[in-house]
Image 1 (spheres, rainbow, N blue to C red):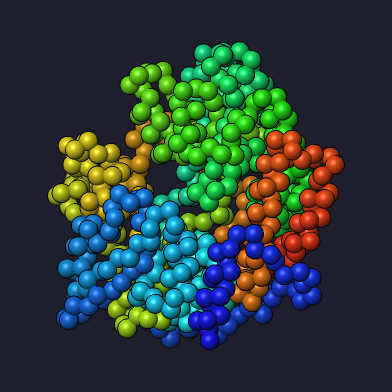
Image 2 (image 1 turned 180 degrees about the horizontal axis):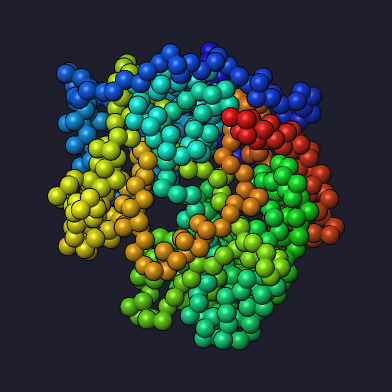
Length: 544
């Protein structure tokens, strides 16, 4: 029966335009109401160090994980780091990758089918059900005691950063899964200018919203090649936003904190209305690309490359690095510069925009109810948090993909000057996953050597990482008693917000005459209930 209910819930979550339940009469559960069985007492469990190989009779562990290389690897089992780990651990890995481009739908179908692998490595915050709900529905197992007893390397990793335990534990103190830890704040994109175009027109990098307006207007009027100065494109889930101005108006495209530290839904606030007003003004003045809502990343890159647009939010790697490397041979002056998000008034502190919350955590690896040997699976996952396991995933095979001199690791010419002409971020995939990742603590040196190859990348990264989060909330989970209703409401709300966002920006809807109707519609979708759910989640997070 649980599996039938689970399948129905997942199929419902896959339907766009889902209608939320109306007229909530019960308040969301508080963190105390959401508490299930107490976690194992730490004093009663001493973590056990593993001996290798873990088993004398080789066993196979199946792992469901998306191929984060966009199909370049094809099968993680071919990566030499995992081949070496198999020999060390005494296990074979069978990796199962959903088809690139339809990962979310295939994940939901896999969960609903009842046919699970031994381990699922996924960002469960993006799934229709979170880890606690999947445990309740017999998809995943409760891993708290297993981690406390058989994961000493993982527990040691958690002790290295005060944020880590807060991110990975549930509101009731349980360890839920093995989390990936990025080397720093996972902030890899931001506002970028074609500064060679600015310099050609005698312009400096703007800092305030008013200066941005003046720069965009001057480019539009003075440079015949710049058709529409500011452009954007759809993100990986098909939404489009102009994040550049959000911090100046102290708002976000999701739940965020207002000036009083209260949780609010950004797109329903007066701050968001003011932000939309500026975008509508820019659009009416011809400063925004009218194709912004239909551009994909390829179209956006083309417009930035040929200079028909000069400003956009770009990533450090696929944006700044790739475009620079492609354009410099034919245009030596081509230069992309990452800049800080604008402020309203000169001298104010700029903040950054990070979708998905402030977190050091990426995907999580959880053991399923179909796993025949959860202890073995726990020990295998824990190995990749040891120094040896981490080096395998981050650097590959010593002597082949990297060398060590005076305790300093460096990638070999086979990686950084690949004889087949592959970029280093692709060449390393034969050996390791330092950028694309599995479940471990990312090595910042390995990441930097591969991903940051141009001064412009490093400068943008240092600038963005040096800012503060502003209105951005940490990554949180709604109490499982409220999670299904919350997700249903947000699914409908976000679809409507995106529709109206485009209409407000392009002038199809009028902010003065249509805003109240828009907000009332959101409230009719039970947004106040969802806001209360998120407020409770924020309170629970702070009390962890």
